[in-house]
Length: 489
Ligand SMILES: Cc1cc2nc3c(=O)[nH]c(=O)nc-3n(C[C@H](O)[C@H](O)[C@H](O)COP(=O)(O)OP(=O)(O)OC[C@H]3O[C@@H](n4cnc5c(N)ncnc54)[C@H](O)[C@@H]3O)c2cc1C
Ligand SMILES: *[C@@H]1O[C@H](CO)[C@@H](O)[C@H](O)[C@H]1NC(C)=O
Ligand SMILES: *[C@@H]1O[C@H](CO)[C@@H](O)[C@H](O)[C@H]1NC(C)=O
Ligand SMILES: *[C@@H]1O[C@H](CO)[C@@H](O)[C@H](O)[C@H]1NC(C)=O
Ligand SMILES: *[C@@H]1O[C@H](CO)[C@@H](O)[C@H](O)[C@H]1NC(C)=O
Ligand SMILES: *[C@@H]1O[C@H](CO)[C@@H](O)[C@H](O)[C@H]1NC(C)=O
Image (cartoon, rainbow, N blue to C red; front, side):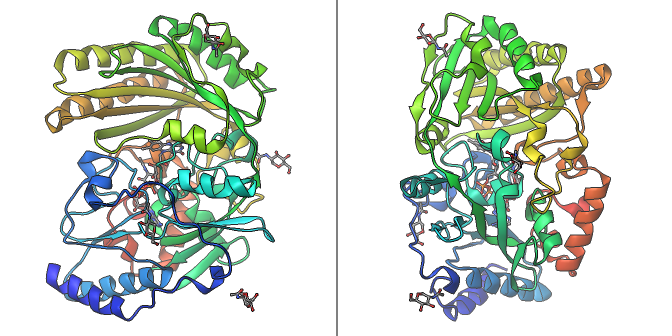
């Protein structure tokens, strides 16, 4: 298989021009200014477990090359099945989502530029750009987009899973601010998907993962760039109950300030040996200590405080993460309810105690509670719709994420089992109390979780229809096994 696919791809690529796409030739392309992650491609995967060993890694430079690769791999599969994976930023910590053993990894690494068109006020962003480089490109032009909170997160996967930015309460989900996707279909055809053209595909891509095509360009709405007030404040873990009470009030406030983003999290790491509660405050205007968080300011004393007025690129750099550890994300959603939040703290304590007793290497535990606000999708339908199905919730809810990071492969089972215990325990409690929410945020889901079903039956039906229409042979279902597959729902 190795020789077959490698020879064919090499031969096919030799005939593809490396010229940039015509449509963007007159705009100034700015390459990513993030340090070179790809000295060795496998080391550049965020999660150590995801460093699988493909037979071959192809690194196309333009949509036309992606199309050729898809055609060649599909044709080769008629002789011998040849599966492949697609990788943009490589941040998903699910082995097989963005890489593959015994197959070909399409690494979009070189498609990492951001261009801005002052006439349309749109930013055209290539899939493997990191959000840090997008912000650094747009800020000097006075423009901004709602993207990832961490500078190292990739554009490609983030926008296909929904995408929560600090600007979400104000401008909605990141995917709903995409006005056009350039997509390579299973046939190798390169099409646009927007409100007017292929509008069903446009809607399905917003939340629908890698089921419909390989996206080679995202055109996003921009807005005026302004400094934010933000940073991370740390308190001792004994204050957790005060934080949860403040979070409940913040999340249920009908007059919540749309500039105020917030994450409250419990954490412990071998680097600090401190069991703490943190709050990430991100206020999208240059206003110091805005009233929106005043209940949190009353929790005293704090241990550290990095808040200041700074540009989005600096805020994102503080959230950036190294790529040297093993990672598990899991998620559960529930109503904004103090008792359920307190149960998360009870289970967290069990998890930490077990890990402290048994883990052999370094680790960092973060358990994050964020408010999913109804305003995130307030304008989704007007903008062409998405498939997340969250409009069915009339009240804000909590999106809980466990984020475990550890150094030793021999601790894999310990961490992954405890992560499972934590979210299963919360789910069980929430179900019994009637506070469980079916929706799961795809970008925080683990492999065994089923976020697509959480979008609701109508959206599942719709995604199946769109997948069949644009990919009748099921190439992206069968040959691209990574990610959450609509054919398996
Ligand atoms: C440190 C950290 C911080 C994060 N912060 C946030 C946050 O603030 N908000 C938030 O919403 N999420 C956040 N996430 C989650 C993040 O959105 C997902 O991990 C996302 O998948 C990352 O995108 P990527 O391009 O780096 O992923 P990749 O791993 O490269 O890709 C993810 C998946 O998408 C598919 N895919 C990628 N590119 C394409 C493409 N061009 N066409 C078709 N399919 C494609 C891949 O096949 C793969 O299955 C964070 C993750 C990390 C690790
Ligand atoms: C690029 O600019 C030149 C000169 O301004 C113009 O003639 C040409 O049509 C432009 N090309 C595209 C693809 O817009
Ligand atoms: C971005 O792509 C260019 C070529 O298109 C490449 O030279 C550069 O190394 C890439 N940058 C990163 C950070 O991968
Ligand atoms: C939705 O649109 C209205 C009207 O344009 C606007 O005032 C509001 O800020 C938008 N909200 C979001 C979350 O996009
Ligand atoms: C994030 O989104 C991408 C694309 O939709 C998906 O393939 C990936 O699995 C998601 N990441 C996580 C951690 O679930
Ligand atoms: C944290 O404590 C310091 C020192 O007391 C104080 O100046 C700062 O305002 C506090 N931060 C917050 C967000 O309340």
